[in-house]
Length: 290
Ligand SMILES: [Zn+2]
Image (cartoon, rainbow, N blue to C red; front, side, top):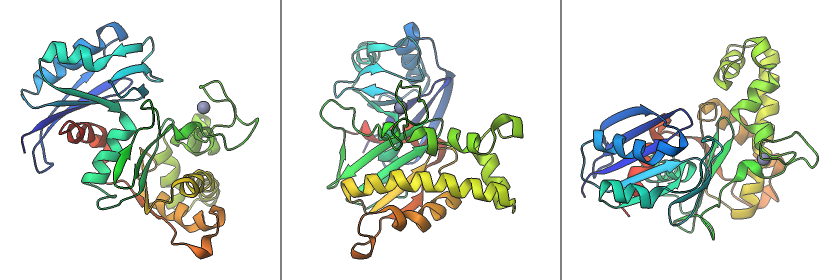
């Protein structure tokens, strides 16, 4: 199989990779994410820098249609109804696929990482918000328009904490990496990232241990909803804070408290993601194989 190109478009930077037929990363390149009007040309320039004539996959946070149109993105102000696939195919002259970034991360974990061999699996990314990707019956699911997996906006508390999406009580307000920092007291207590809180808990701080337990309970609540809906074999936890194996262990230990009929079923395995911060770019390249 020939090599393919993958690009992960983040809010501030883009990562591009060239992936070989066996899944190894051959080359990487990084560029700052351009403004909305220059986005497609900026992605094309990154692809050109990677010097590959293979097909291109692009992952971007937001609502991406089956046709590769980015309807809206929480990380890219000013982007709406942008035909990313059409624009890139014109500029590169090759075949392009565009997908949600969590779907790309799922592809990486399913084909190369912690969910290899699973017929039914979720990837749950716990970062600034929460993203999700679903494999059901051995196939990646995208829903009717391409917008499946926006699990961060499942409401877990009616009338709860305000979410940037404009609604109240969304799961990501309680269970994202951002939420972990907030539960621990935020920047005023010296916590910039969820990993800082996890490190404190790991080193024996009882207060932070309690914070991590509370946060893990919120994660388990949402994961149990996903498991009740789709009955997965495995749930992979990813994202900056979520891919710490301590989190998977903590969530697995309380999942049975939330799940429907836990004594009559095999509980889904809860495991840490393995593909790291390059998962989105690598997964985009894998999806470009078509
Ligand atoms: Zn929301």
